[in-house]
Amino acid sequence: MSLLIMTGVEIANVTKEYYVGGHTFCALRNVSLTISPGSFTIIVGKSGCGKTTLLRLLAGLEEKTAGKVGSNDSGITQQGSRIGIVFQEHRLMPWLTVRENMSFSLVQKNDQWKVKSVVDRYLSILGLEQFQDAYPVQLSGGMAQRVALGRTLCYNPDIILMDEPFGALDYFTRKKMQQEIVDLFLLQQKTIIFVTHDVTEAVYLGQNIIVMDAGEVVREVPVGLPYHRNPVSPEFLAIQSEILYSLGANQFGV
Amino acid sequence: MSMAVNARTFRSLCLPVMLAIVWIIGSSLSIWNSYIIPTPAEVVGNAYKLALNGTLFKHAAVSLYRVFAGFLAAFLLAFPLGVLFGMNSQVRDYFEALLEFLRHIPPLAAMPMLILWFGIGEWPKLLIVVLATFFPIFLNTLHGVASCDVKLIEVGKSFGLRKREIFRRIVLPAALPSVLVGMRLGLGYSWRALVGAELIAASSGIGYMILDAEQLARPDIVVLGILTIGILGSVIDWAFFHVTQLASPWRGGEFTNYDRG
Image (cartoon, each protein chain N blue to C red):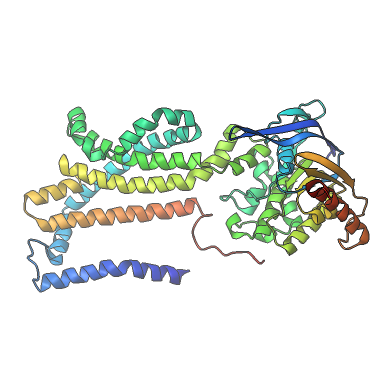
């Protein structure tokens, strides 16, 4: 059995500014976070609140303007931890089949038998065996997103970053994918940071919910409910209202 | 699927067959002078005769050789340059004005200069093909490389791929359809430019065959030459298209949609 590396995330006073049309736009303002290893963290907020910027910064796809990323400001990828991202769009390579897309990050590995066994495992877990030879253009949105998730899982990251991965899916597919993510989390206990604007999704998935508004963290809400959660239970609805209230109170001064 | 293909083939052959029928009927009823439009019997008879004594194949082979040699040279030049310019916008800036100027010059306009510099041997003809083929391949490669989806490149970065790997595994395959379109266009252009060059200065090739027939007042051989050019061009294009389909199976074709939603 492989050694399980538990990796968390630490950022301090991170600010990110963009220069748009000669004006400075502050996407993140003094954001500090500590995310424990093996936890499921949700970043929730309205569109434009900086949640995707924060995620891209953690992934190393954006440069911060100020602050510290990682315990000694070396970036979270520099600590020997692997980061995998699932984007809002599936971003599958159109010229590769489902199987080839899933093994995309493993191609350099020499041990082809091992690559095959890893891909086989996730094809089976995600129910994609039948479609392994299909091209992305032949898949439905939900299926393509599942392949994208599989591709990230095959990479075996210590930290999985997810940027509204189910945003474009229909209600039923979205619910099914949420259940699958919870199952995977329970199975593998990887550190997951999941961005969404859907408060119900946030409470259903997360152990810890970070509420963001206008580039700032306005609240952290721990969710003590056991998995799988009932979205109409009073406890669930209470946490949901609390988050909605935090978001509304900032916006409307209620 | 095969029924759809058959229907499409039928539709695409309708007009050529009708034209052939009009040609046959018009000629047999002597609606036009056979010197103005030679009869099908003359053309087919001559095709048989010239095929039998090897003249037709000799000229066709020479033209084909020039097209492929010129095309290959143009590809070897245009593809790396297209990649370089597509990847590096600064290099592109330096050459943009010059390339834009050259792009608008029809290759045949350079023929007198090429004859002056290289004589009337093979070189001017090959260079005409290179000039005609270069820009479609170059510009399509450049466009394919430069317009590679940044989101796919980010996927490569997120998996820790180095620049060279990102280029090989993402940029190049993403640009492939565009490169193939450029090559297909280039093949068509090269064929047209070559026959033009052969009409000006050559002692062999389909263009020369047509020019020679004109001087000998043999319109039947002129028509045979035109038909040979059209048929060879179509066959090459058809073959190239099917090779490109094999090279990019994720595009086109009739997919079964697995969407069960």
